[in-house]
Length: 230
Ligand SMILES: C[S@@+](CC[C@H](N)C(=O)[O-])C[C@H]1O[C@@H](n2cnc3c(N)ncnc32)[C@H](O)[C@@H]1O
Image (cartoon, rainbow, N blue to C red; front, top):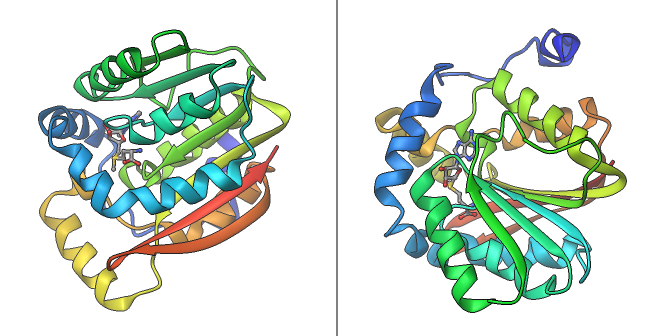
């Protein structure tokens, strides 16, 4: 981990305007927005979620983890496909995690599906536990050190040969990027900053081999969807 933090490929560090302690504020802001968040997913994230689902290779009977479930829209897709397996979810915000757990218990009463309030930087699972891990729109909210820490944790709990599917906010449209920079400077704990252009460095540094990589657009909102194998 220490080596990665000092790795020369990261020397040209991200424009890291996120203070290390931002997680507390992120937790507070997402906690407050938990009831409204499904709207944002519906308008901006659902197409990327569908693509991530298709590319992830997730099949029934697997041990699956979703990191940063938000209000649980992707989590419910995962549970629907993985009825005979176990699907675990986590989110830093207790309200988001509770909301996700509540919806999934109602919709899929017989399934093994649990969501808890957990910080992705410190995953409470043993090594090589999951067949597949999914993480959508989280890395933007983490400082560079925390991105590396979280990816190390993901690699640790993923089985050899397991897949990691990652969704990020796309950076291909200059107008959108400008708007995002403004929003990010107004409310960094909610918006974070775009990091898509560094993502292949991050995955390669963690020995995660990219299997698929595409950009999808919903309205004006671009997302990059990658699946990698350990
Ligand atoms: C932009 S939302 C994305 C939600 C969902 N994945 C989606 O695709 O719509 C980011 C989520 O990450 C969660 N989050 C932020 N920092 C986290 C951390 N350190 N560990 C776990 N979850 C975190 C927030 O609480 C929030 O629910």
